[in-house]
Length: 107
Image (tube, rainbow, N blue to C red):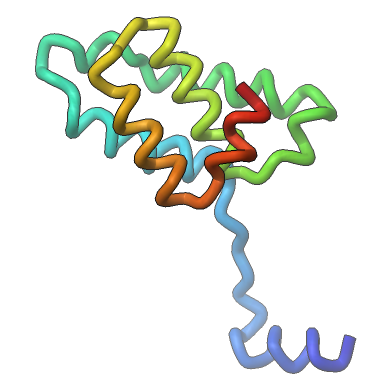
């Protein structure tokens, strides 16, 4: 606890965790950049946000890492919308975020 207090004092008690919503925004913007213009409206951010809120209402999802939860929601939406061209992008994001196996378990 002493070390914890020292670290908190060094960062001036400014501690913020990255949320699943922030990951969702990041992943969504990365994917939007790689979609053709005519397909950009297929993946709706408000729908993704609603799915995230629904996940937060279930206790089982409270144990998932925020990055895994956000990536899983986007991956499921891409499957539902049949955006085949983004499948490779999702797999790349999974590997880059080191959440590959965790995301596969949630899917």
